[in-house]
Amino acid sequence: MRVFTAALATETNTFSPIAVDKRAFEASLYARPGEHPATPTLCTAPITVGREVCAREGWTLIEGSASWADPAGLVARATYEELRDEILEQLRAALPVDAVVMGLHGAMVAQGYDDCEGDLLARVREIVGPDVLVCAELDPHSHLTRKRVTAADFLVAFKEFPHTDFVDRARDLWAIAVRTLKGEIKPVMSVFDPRMIDVFPTSRQPMRGFVDQLYALEKSEPNLLSLSVIHGFMAGDVPEMGTKIIALTDDREDLGDTLAERLGRELFAKRGTFMVPQVNEAEAVEQAMAATSGPVVIADVWDNPGGGTAGDATVILADLIRRGISDVAVGTIWDPIAVQICFAAGEDAEIPLRFGAKSAPHTGNPIDRLVRVNRLVRDAQMRFGDSYAPFGDAAWISFDGIDVILNSTRAQSFDPSLFSALGIDPKSRKILLIKSTNHFYDSFSKIAFEIIYCAAGKPYPNKPAETAYRKAPRNIWPIVEDPWGA
Image (cartoon, rainbow, N blue to C red):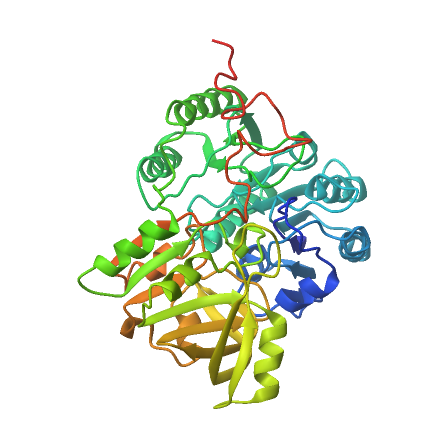
């Protein structure tokens, strides 16, 4: 067997002012054929898992390029077309192939392209024809369009949020592909639209129990190959935005249709109960101050670079400063210019510095302080499960008992190693202020005395009923209260 694999991924917040060009991919991951590292990024696990599988099966794996950019705004048209066409040319050169296994995100939007993944998969299908297997792994924070469902034989999405299972789901993808290529099964996709958009963390109920049910059904239900929940991405203003259920069966469309609808209606019945309760910045700081031990983690959930924001909001930090609170470590605030200034000054320098709150309205005001530059690190990285996430050149500055990590490559706070990478012991601080919606939970919960979810400012359109969508469907909850017209 000859199998082609490649990856092209980012998550596009169409409301974000941060445009994405090829430099954004190069800052996060741009690997030409054969250059992909041994460890995967979030959406490139099909490549690294594919190496294991094809070596075991004695098959030939032809690797194309792998590109990943940290979430931001619209991708430049020329950038998307260049990266897409690079993969398509590699595929043409690899022909004939028996299968194409892709690593995608599912929420990429470029200038002129509302459905990048649908466009890419349709072009892949055009090249290989109707009889070659085409499949892909998706992030659940994506859009499931008719175009990509038509183009692919099957799709598998991560189940967990935080996405601790992206390698496991790549193994599922490959296991189904192998059985299909050997003629053991015939995958058929069923899709149900529960007409909603919500946030579904699996670190708490009721989504924890819902996902556990999916695992149980996959083990117990004959002819069921895979179940996926496409959460949807509410900051992507595209025509098919919203939650979807995928049931993949072995030639049992009737079973898949029944399961997908049953599970979709169960999700709809629990709408509005999934997200962790959040407090404002004043309540978050009060609660952290009242804690009897530490570290207390304050998660700035909506200034999350993983959702396409800048990660430079200062609303919570300003409240901490105003109250004179110390023993705080902040990781991170994105400010490439401030980082450059710190590198120019050098370690141990004391300099006046303005940083943060430069990207957009409703993110607070820049902070002006006389700071000490404690540590400078080129190409800093933190752990994220089995992978590493770069956050660029970084500077550890301090003032008034507060430590702040400034970074030059936007990245959400995945893991406490973002602090230790700069020489800060995160367990030694009373308060850790981080930027993430829920991906932080798996690792930070292991060291936190308490976790506080804080909604501060308005850097992210997190209330769909109030968001000024232009393209998104209007017949989904909570944009309308009763999309079923009961």
